[in-house]
Length: 125
Image (tube, rainbow, N blue to C red; front, side):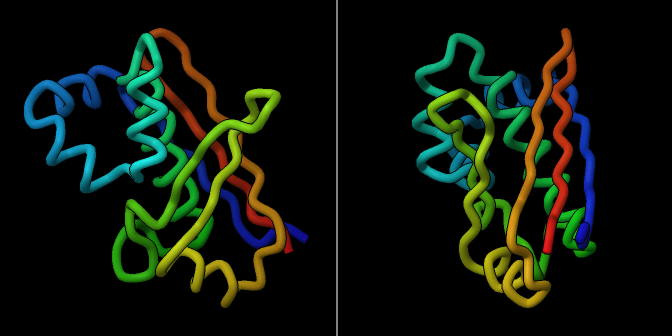
């Protein structure tokens, strides 16, 4: 049973500008250490991080709460499994929200096209 669905699109140049403006402050406020570490290994870290940003926004929309009291940026961490598929891990408020809604599975898809990254999240009971 589907509990929620969210989609978000991010302009990659927006993330690139934020990285150049104040990289460490921005990174540490939004992304987990694992996401930051992974991005440093990528040729295009802005593209990688834009996809992760989109997942965070899409997941908060699927929860029906947005980023804020029930879901913080760093409560959502997305990595890739052995086949390259995105896998999202929750902690803190996001984990409590997920448990409260009885979420069993989080389906995540990330795609990049030229100037944009898009993510779709489906929550399943």
